[in-house]
Image 1 (cartoon, rainbow, N blue to C red):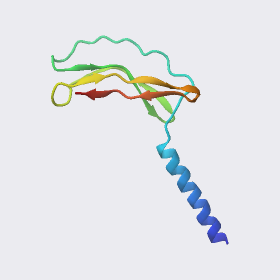
Image 2 (image 1 turned 135 degrees about the vertical axis):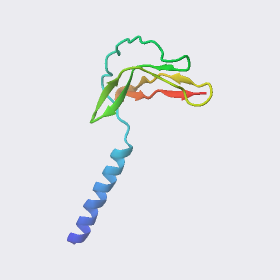
Image 3 (image 1 turned 120 degrees about the vertical axis):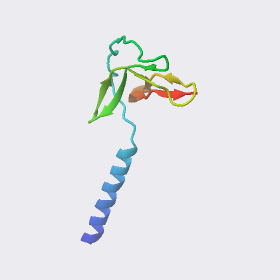
Image 4 (image 1 turned 60 degrees about the horizontal axis):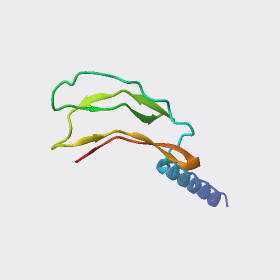
Amino acid sequence: MKKILKLFIAGVIFLAAAQAASAQVYVRVRPTAPRVERVVAPSPRHVWVDNDWRYENNQYVYNGGRWVEPPQGHHRWVNGHWKRHGKKGWEWKEGRWED
């Protein structure tokens, strides 16, 4: 009986951990507007990647903007943005490169 109970508890913990690993994080109040920064491009090929956020240690951390060289070809950077999900809250959609 104890062995079955231990297996059951281990299974519940495993399923909870798997669910938490794939869960989407929502916030009730999105962070305030980012700072405005102006910097000269290091070369004509560089593209400005605007301010964004990353989720780290159970909180969103602000990243300042930066100059980067795009991947192969003529790509365009689409800035990240906060997307509203009704009563659930706000979700951060990361920036990405598009053709």
